[in-house]
Length: 200
Image (cartoon, rainbow, N blue to C red):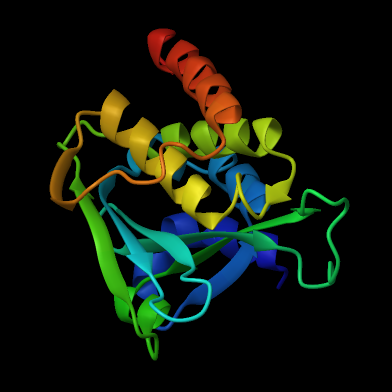
């Protein structure tokens, strides 16, 4: 069974398999959500931003959707890109999503610090809303930049837009790195505002 088929099925059947975990490109995740009934029925209930305290201090997001689905979102440079595209350290991005029926599965064996936790109301963002935001983000940020559109920028942009447009409650931590990638951040917010204003 292909990864795409597994993820499409996961939107309906994930809860039945307590050991299900699958990592795919974010663009593939967006396609899978769009082709599923889960697009409108699944609601994002919480968002947590984690940081790995060693090395480059990589950050990623973990979102809970409904009662049984956990989603980890990451951005990094593609592994095969050992050298940047130019002197300003630009790489091809590797934006990935790991979907699981268990938060423990996503975080097992990792030493982490929680940097922020956001909780959404019952009418918070749907999986379809998340899909549209991630699609816009991918279109407006086609490069990974060491000092700009990196993992911290990625997490900050997703956290900022979902929290602002869907009345998310910041239970702990802050919204950080708002100074990174200001131009692309503004374009993403403007486009996503239009999506929200049009009633999705």
